[in-house]
Length: 252
Image (tube, rainbow, N blue to C red):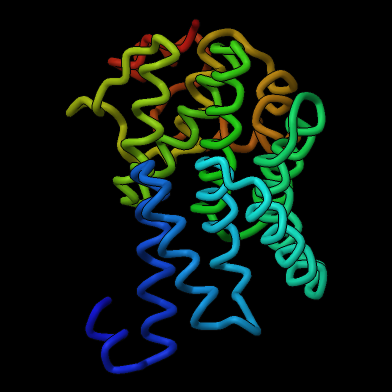
């Protein structure tokens, strides 16, 4: 980053500071994330990217800088309203949740997960589940928190975002869940979403119940379960216990 800054390369500095802000937020080092995100704003004072503002909002909200976070949220709203996309509105809802409380916060988190689930940005969806899970844990709803934290953990692990995976891992431990690394015989061919749906189905939840928790339609859940059965060479939910070894911590 220092090379780009010293050379006065605005785009390079912007990108370096944005990457640093993402990394520090993933590590939970919010003071450093805020400093990096503020640096992005200084480089592009007149046109702050919608990609950088969420980092500033998350870091500011976590360090008690609520006024700064609120001001950034206003700028993000203006930036995301232009495109009128699920990505933009989903990111805005996720950030809005950080500055909300109670039912309003939960409504925002649900909207974020629903909208981002319709995009091709799995990292942003995973971050929505992570923040929602963290909020649920602080609200004392540990069982609900585990569902979203596990989804986030599986997604970050599959994507290779180790900083965020570690953050989700620590949050899961805080709920009382024992988080195990994938065993050698665990079916790695399942996607994170398929793995999550399979674990939930194994507990006896119906397609509708699974869909309600993951913001999917029952038909979509059925579709994913069909792929799970085919990949695991099984024909019923009752066989999931044997087909998914080492994953016996689905219940609170």
